[in-house]
Length: 263
Image (cartoon, rainbow, N blue to C red; front, side, top):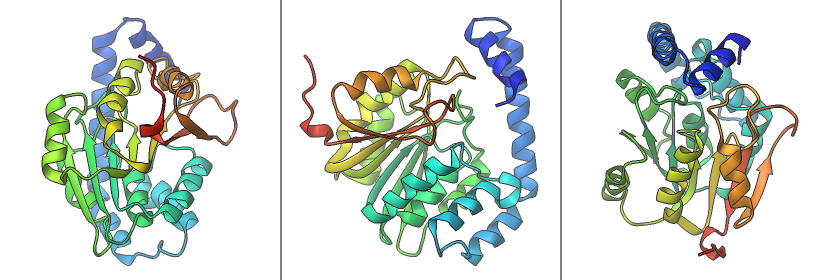
């Protein structure tokens, strides 16, 4: 993150220049979306070639670079590669991603989940972290699916109980093998998503949280605070390239239903 962007987010976090900073963020979102729109056909052609199927490394390279970073995941390259190696071994059949933004992580889940997997994304247009994605990208995101897979896109606020009800209505009551929480990165936001959706994980499933390291660049990101709380309760593991890197980091929660949660 640039020093200018970090400074602007610090000001917004402190309650200064909130309106102008939000306006700048909106303009940046529109410019990025316009650039992506111009690159959409090339991205479609590149996706249809499937030349990235050989390995996780090729998939991550493609996600990071295709179409002038059309759907570049906001992830540390080493960390997301390591996560996807595990997903490829686990072969989850039901995947829930909360927070999709540019779509890179959703793309990688599709490449490494089971060939007949059902994947669902919940994303809030113009959300505070990631900015969401414009409606016209929906068809491209659905094209991430391999033959035999299905991708369902739900656009709305994951914090609303009605969204959880819609998810269950659309996907059925069966639990999810993998749940990725990567939406609102404020403490209250990530806590709400965990409390709402973690109970939907399968007994042997995995919950994944992104940005579990303390963020030295954006004071609005406080996933680390919530992560430190749940580490004391659940069976957890961290996928971190460098503990001193100042941001990012992936956390895994296993055996959610067997945890001893304090009253």
